[in-house]
Length: 85
Image (cartoon, rainbow, N blue to C red; front, side, top):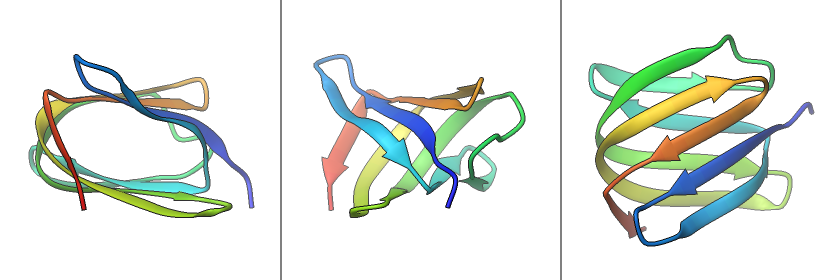
């Protein structure tokens, strides 16, 4: 399955950086699904569960607000509040 690079970042640290097969991101107006080679996108984030699926397994975090940028097969999730599920 094709992959893309994803980074999950808070002001304190890079929480996750690696290859993903898919991601489900809580946008301000509903959830967004990301796959490899997604169209460029910039979106405000809402509150909910961020799910990142990798070839090795699934990672989940609760987030509250932030920003999602997708460009050039790289997704960046920037958030102030993140809690591991």
